[in-house]
Image 1 (cartoon, rainbow, N blue to C red):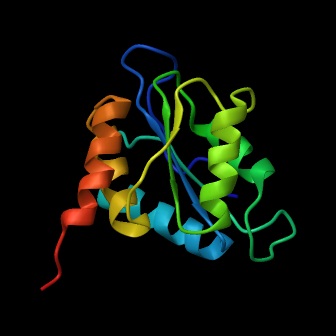
Image 2: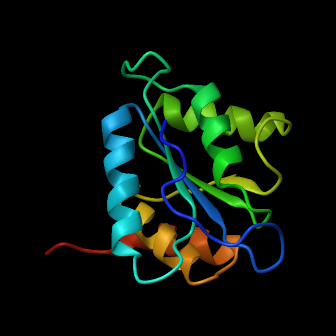
Length: 146
């Protein structure tokens, strides 16, 4: 997992929503996080972190890395968590249901991984709240490519 890639305001009201990108692959999560932060550039960018693969660098999903990433980007305004597939979805759903390991306001966002990540980070960087960030990421399902 990478540490947060960019800064933002600290703590509570006026703070940016954090974004965590969970992939079965560390390099995929890191690359998507870097691309989303880069495309949201031009000022303060919302905090974004990657939680990809397993702690030993293998393919898979790690609750430990997801929790660490969420805590890294949490500024008190909520954390949008986007996932790639399968067990990543199940792991985040379990963490949200448990309710005691993720920061308050952490939410699994149903969105395409790459397009949703860009929309989430761009929207969070504009100062939008968690509902707006989740909506923007989810709307990425509607982007047609033909």
